[in-house]
Image (tube, rainbow, N blue to C red):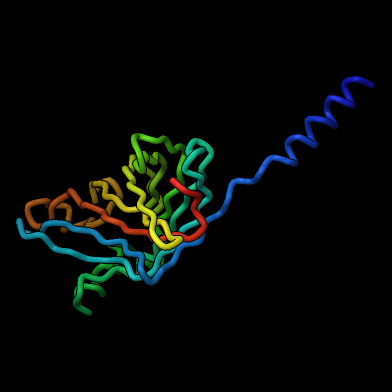
Length: 187
């Protein structure tokens, strides 16, 4: 009987714990962009469609769950002709792989308003571990998460075939983000 009572008390205690708050992405003020170099010249692009699933409390970063989906067909370099190339099999192959997906595996605080998010990034069904430094700022009931990280495009077979030559398009790609969220607790 004691073990049943202990189990019942444990279940009641767990049920009374506050759940991790879930935040909402505000798409209009948010942005995800990327910069690569073509023949040594920086080329900037952006993704027009993406979503985030975030459950995060600043005072409990280790409990956070963060996921992102990016619509690869929404990539733009500012020209319809170039954008059409990005959708082709040698680049994003958006017919077979419509989304890039990030799922966190850990979050730790690195300073006031600063965090390090580790997780898996999958593009074209190829997954690699990434570490993403994130800075949070709060104003007017909104939290802005910003940062940048680098990937190697060839690790994900982006720019396959004739485009593997890194003298034309560099392997390194810098990804920058500014994600505006509602519902994050105070820093």
